[in-house]
Amino acid sequence: MQIFKVIEEALTKPPIPHEPYKQSLKAWAMYCLRDRGFKVIYAQNADFAIEPKGGEKLYFKVSNNPVEQDNSISWIVWDSASKSASLIPPLTEVKD
Image 1: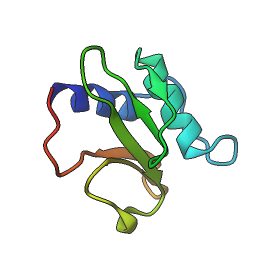
Image 2: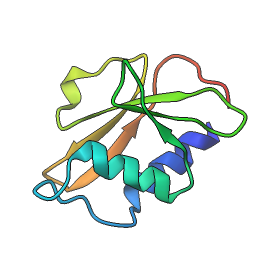
Image 3: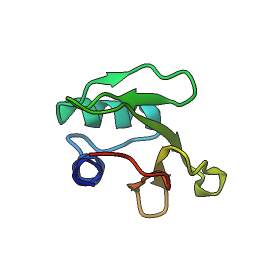
Image 4: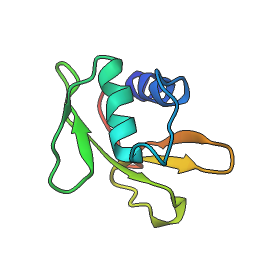
């Protein structure tokens, strides 16, 4: 899943650090992905989606609490202790 490696790198090596008191996790994640050239779009049943060129939409939810995860979509989880974000891809198969 090459695309998830690129997404994870966008979050682990962001253009700006996430500062929870300045911006929401959702806004920060969307900014990081746009900075990497992804087309970030509205999603009805998720926080947002990206549309890779020639591929299916990938849906994302963001959280500060890794316990509440739905395994059918990707999650971006913020760990306030380590001040880092991690990507949890969906358990269902996504085509590259």
